[in-house]
Image 1: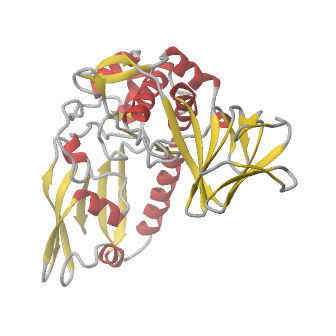
Image 2: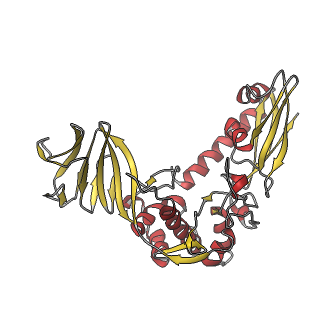
Image 3: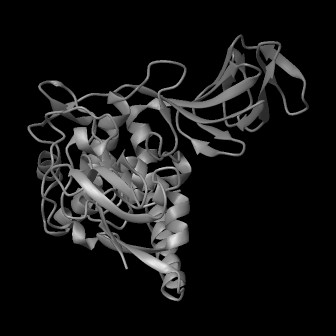
Length: 362
């Protein structure tokens, strides 16, 4: 799901949930909070706000990543699109050492511990070893059109469907899915630099480097690109965020609620990173999730937090926060027993937008 789609879905669910709870006599818990996401690094809505106020992307990046500079770097990235027993494709002029017709359809198939290339009639063209590679400019059945090459890697009787391409082409397929094309150009430029840096800095160096979803960053290939986001990529060609000459890990998220968080407090088991410090985010209020509230019935709250308290649930106490007001630790207090848990676990159990939340039992 795209960045905009994720926010819209969450916002709709919150509204529906609040309306249901408001009409229920069982509604006893009110949770008020701010922001959406882990809170570390660049706030996308904050960057949107800065750009709307005429701030350039270089200053936006310097604000969210403390003490960093801009450098230049490029490379190849392998993106995992999915996994299946076979994958069809067209548009390739060559695969596994064989010349192909770009207008014909072919299929990579997992076979005998390796990969076979078959034509449109299912006839074997050649064996490809443990990895089939089709040349650039491809349309992958069930996925869409992609720059770069299709790689089908045999993995336990299945094929890992991978798109291998240069970092600039990769970023074209990311920015359009992480920021609305209608946003100011400097917000899109900031996203381009951040996405390029993150893609290169977190490459795994194995069979594939990145997922195509929110486990890495959302990548939609050529079909998802827009004129505006491609312009932002071109304007920032090969630019990356660096700290002391090395690539920074440029975490980003949707909405800060007005302040970002330190790396050690924003992630479970996080460690201090000099350039991932909490900063004020004055223009983040453009986000529909800058402020939010949710209402839970007693039964729903107790079900979601079951096993963390004894007796009747009485309150949720915030016992430790980060540099922002996000919860690092909270105590779930019951009439008979209580448990202290990490803020991320509390957010997960209750399905909250962020760990910047406060609880009231009425």
